[in-house]
Image (cartoon, rainbow, N blue to C red; front, side, top):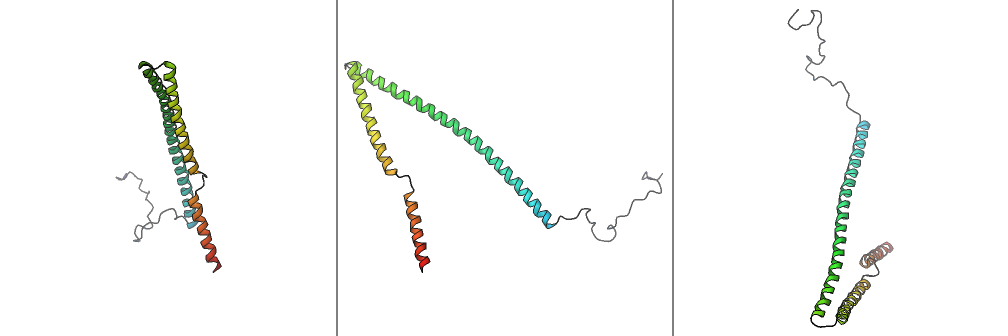
Length: 156
């Protein structure tokens, strides 16, 4: 046997483009324009689905963090409420310690807290009245002005 380990009658098939000077043609044809367009549509659909899925997961993670943060704020608010109660009790005890009768100490603190509550309620009511109605008045006025301008120009 020769050095190539092939039988003597076994000759490889000639490459048709090997000696012609032209590059060999690939075995598959290039896809047509409709096929390319369909590939583009399919790839775009896949990309959009993946982006939506990624946005969904991102919003889920952020939503969890917002929930935890809101819970923490709620806990802080509750502790702040208790802190104010303890501070008021401490003020009552201080008034008792300096010689004011217990019931009068409690009454003094209650009146002060009620006065603070009334002031906050009145200021809050004023702020809410300034904010109502909850319509975007400037934007509405601007849109009305735009409509009037378009009507005037349409008449010309």
